[in-house]
Picture 1 (cartoon, rainbow, N blue to C red):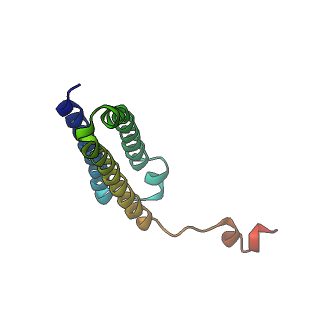
Picture 2 (cartoon, rainbow, N blue to C red):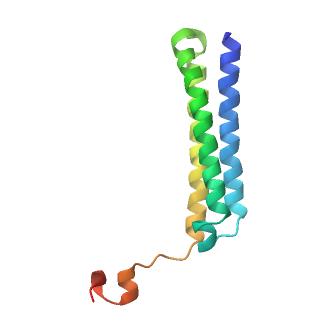
Picture 3 (tube, one colour):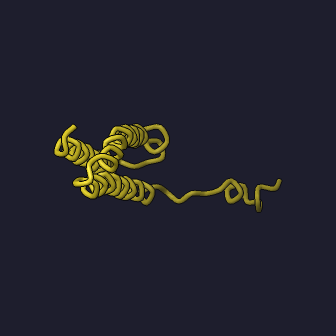
Length: 122
């Protein structure tokens, strides 16, 4: 591959990775959050889909970045920065979405608190 094609492929895949993160964040911001949706509902499906898409895009990018590091000295820094920036944007958006979902859930209660006995003793 030529210099521009490798760099263009890394930048496009990193952009798609960032868009996947942003789409998940927007979905998490506007979704109705309850225990059923968090356990088995659409939030679980979309989180899994976003993580699967991210993993696939990262695995596709790794050989391109390694090729740029080994064979193309002129684009090393740009390829690595684009790769890491796409991962950072996805991670940040995914984390913000998950934090928003966690804040909407009711507080957790352990079984020891519900039974009234310390540490679940009978």
